[in-house]
Amino acid sequence: MIKYKLICKACTISFDSWFSSSKEYEKLKKFKHLNCHNCHSINVEKTLMAPSVVNSKDKIVSISKDKKTLKIRNKIKEYQKFIKKNFNYVGDNFASEARSIHYNEKKNTKGIYGDATAEELSELKDEGIETEVIPWFNDKEN
Ligand SMILES: [Zn+2]
Image (cartoon, rainbow, N blue to C red; front, side, top):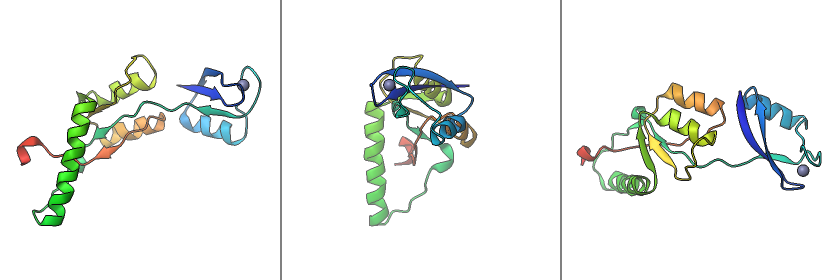
């Protein structure tokens, strides 16, 4: 079961609703079976979730040292710096932390980053939790 926070665009009321899966939500939405508890408008949308960022151990890119790839590498490092500064590192707990943010158990407005397996990512995706996989350099690799 998945709980989504839905918002009615007609009367701007938001309410929680349970679905058996993210696919069920899509289906109900598609066939216009989702409506507002208050005004019965079908103009109902899922609210946006806090961003979650993940890096995957499988996706570390090996980059040679010519100028062009160094430039890309520096860009990634900048991105990495930004994430380190603005996101909470949760290590291997990424999947469970992403869930607590998604289901609102934690009042955490900060994004998180950490490690997740491809399997965990696909489970999160099934639950409607957005993640982003980015290349990641270890500090030692300099
Ligand atoms: Zn409404």
